Image (cartoon, rainbow, N blue to C red; front, side):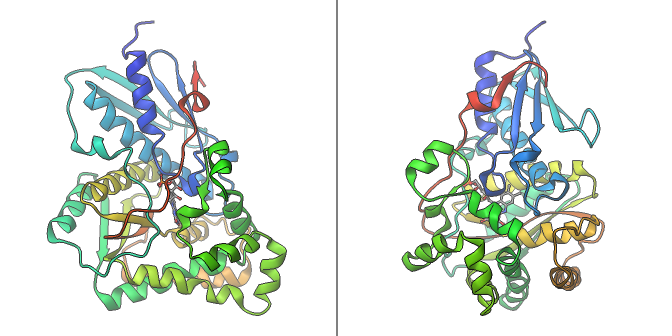
Length: 360
Ligand SMILES: Cc1cc2nc3c(=O)[nH]c(=O)nc-3n(C[C@H](O)[C@H](O)[C@H](O)COP(=O)(O)O)c2cc1C
């Protein structure tokens, strides 16, 4: 078979791909290379969270991976042609990438692929600079059907912060969501380096006392006990403050509701995140609630209690009053702003653990 892409180049393209973000850093992928094409395969068992309804959180992560790969391939002189769901939307094969040799095209965002990271710190009380706001909007507009909303007005931010932070209450009242989070927390450097997935406890940016309490909260029995005295109702206060205190709360929508909209939306999101990094802006996805709403919309409300269903219906209504989300894929809600660097970065599985030679 004629090799359309050099082995060394393909390794660099894959390395860039796996820098992509994924829910709780679960890295739900396997990458196959048959000498000519790359095949991106979703490993469903890696993300069994209720948030990942019909794999849409993973599809967003795949979109981010594809964007990283495209930027890197161009810099190496390849155009990538992407086919999404070549075996249909029910197959685990998310995308096939073919390479066409051409001239190298340098994209300034290339330099931020390995620098972009989530920052869960408190952000500085600063307004977005005009050129930053414009750059983010321009980036979103490069993707047909994408709409990026930046909420900067204090009163509007409070309204949205209240809706988004309800996620943290549900997280501590739902065993699946609770267990998935705690299974992905790495408590020591050694643990993080061994697994090379999940999130280090440092990256959650908790205070000393909060961190000690968090360890105890890994026990669902203990959380249930605390909830008898109303613990979960107090949890959203922290996220609410973080949201309210950021320069902007953002929502990214994509036209359509098919799975391809989530992959394409993931590409747009990654480009927005890379642009934010290039502008010195920190970014923190706070998007649990949008995935739970999509669970309801997709008629997949199993796993949610009646009271949570009612709560989510109410939040959905209130979100609809703010954003035109009907019949659109809700890709991501996140906060952005200016902050000190994060305390820790998440690790990735090495290429040899995700790359498989051959056809999937
Ligand atoms: C689809 C998706 C949803 C995410 N949701 C959240 C979230 O609600 N809260 C959060 O703190 N991080 C969220 N993240 C960020 C991931 O936890 C983060 O990207 C991952 O741990 C890897 O870290 P890095 O981005 O610093 O490389 C999300 C990421 C993706 C791709």
